Image 1: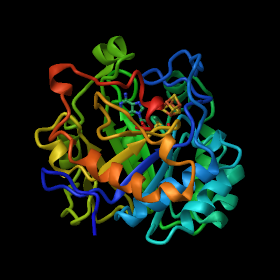
Image 2: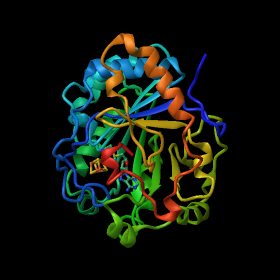
Image 3: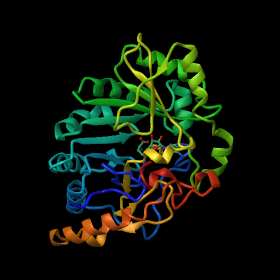
Length: 327
Ligand code: SAM
Ligand code: SF4
C-alpha cells in the first residue's frame, strides 16, 4: 500500500491543517499589524473538502492531526471540523494550537466534539509582558482557560512560548513555578525568521539552547526521547509535575526527525514550513471520486521533499509569517 514516506527515510504520520489565516492577536513576530486579508486570497477549505483531505491522508498513514491557523477558534464551524476529524478511521489524535482567548468559553464543546490534545500559546506569565508581545491584554482569561482545559479530560495540554530576547527571556523561573503542581509541558520555541519579520528577528532572536544551562543549574535533566517524539527536547525534574521543552529549529539535524506535512487554509500542500512551493490540492477535493488521484498526488509530491530547510542561508521560503501556514 502506498504511504506517506520520502526518499530520505522519513515517514509523515502528522498533518498540520490551517483552518483560516485570520487572527485576533498581533504577536510582534507574526502579525504585528494584525491580520489583513489579501485581495484574491482563496476561500478557506469547506467542511466537505476537509473531510476528503483528511480521509486521503489517513488512508496513507496520517495518525495525528493538528488544527491551527491564524487563530483556529475564530472558525465558526470549529466543533464540526473537530468532530469530522475525530470520526476519520485511523486518526488517533486530534490536536489544536490556539492563542487561548476563547478557551475558557469553548473548551467543553471542543472536548465533546473529540479534541484530544491542546497547545496554548502563552509567551509570558507576566500580564504586561504578555500584552506587549501579543498586542492583547488577555493573560488572565487565557490562564483561566488553561486551568479549565486541565480538568476537561484532554490527553495532553501544553503551553508554547516563543523565546524573545529582551521580552520574555527572563520568564523561565515563572514557567518553572507554573509546572510545579500542574501536569503540563511548557515548550520554548526558538524564534524563526520569516519573510515579514526580519527586523523583529534581528532584535529578539536568541538561541533556545541558552535555556539548557539555566535548567541544568536548577537540577533539571533532559528526558529520554520517545520513538515518535516531535522536535522538542524535554527536560524534567523529580519535584515538578510538568516538563520544560526546547524546540531549536536552527540546531544541526533538526530536519532529520521531520515527521509532519502542512496544508494551508486554502488547500495548498506545503512539504516544508520554509519550502518554496505550494501544491494546490483543492481541485482534487471536489468529489469523492477523486480520492485515488488525490492520494497519488500526495505520494508523488512527497518524493520531492527536500532533506532540510535553507533557513541557515537566510532562505525563508514562501511564508511571509507563520499565520499563513499554521506554524
Ligand atoms: N494562533 C495560534 C497560536 O498562536 O497558537 C495558532 C497559529 S500560530 C502561527 C502557531 C504557533 O506558531 C504559535 O505557538 C506561535 O507562537 C508560533 N509562531 C508564530 N510565529 C513564529 C515565529 N516566527 N517563530 C517561532 N514560532 C512562531
Ligand atoms: Fe495570531 Fe498565533 Fe500569529 Fe499570534 S502567533 S498573531 S496568535 S496566528
